[in-house]
Image (cartoon, rainbow, N blue to C red; front, side, top):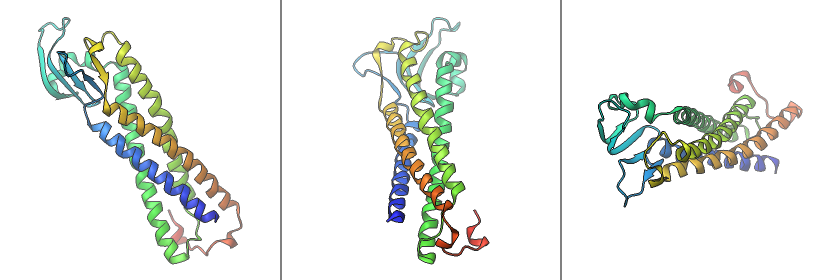
Length: 226
């Protein structure tokens, strides 16, 4: 019964992490974090973490008074003259932290897939009595916890600064936070759920390591190395 409950907790954490990663993957690559209302003309159209779209954006402080049209990568040479305006500190912080969380979630999903496949193999070979890797389990817990803490913090900062930074996009009252930002928020919630499940799973594994080794199947060095 304990083993069955342990697998349920692990599977729940695995599913939560996969969902969180997939949602963040879509949000990470899509340019719909902030969007202009479609029925109102605005020189700003949409923006994501890595792509910005304009329809004749002209900045008064720029010496050349150049009009920017179309969608471009945020680091494209086209935006060099106004990069400091387009990417204030809070925007860069969002890019860095979301990227770090994205990488962390990818690593977690890879590790948990490895643990899941290893469990299936050892269940067939040893009857599912062998102990999982405590190091890998704790690593996934720490990375997921970090993502669950950092993502909500940076998303709140982004949502607040979008509407309060008067030096950023013009006519911000004509724009709104769109579905890409919403997917990032939902991803953060799933990271929290995954953290809760992984913390409980790690506690179970740590308790197993306190039990006598005689209760477990024999382990040789080659099979147990990780």
